[in-house]
Image (cartoon, rainbow, N blue to C red; front, side, top):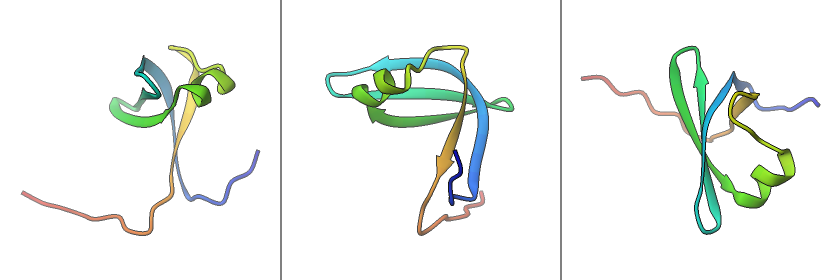
Length: 68
């Protein structure tokens, strides 16, 4: 599959927590955890599982930078 989004972060699924309709999928990307909120149906359709390699794909109109 090809995708136009430039921000593709490859990692490993470390946790999937299903709620009533939405699941939180935690992805370890080089030691940093990225969390995605997707539907339970998407988790099932993609057959996502802990330990599986996956990509976090970020498509946003704005990305802000902050400092302390």
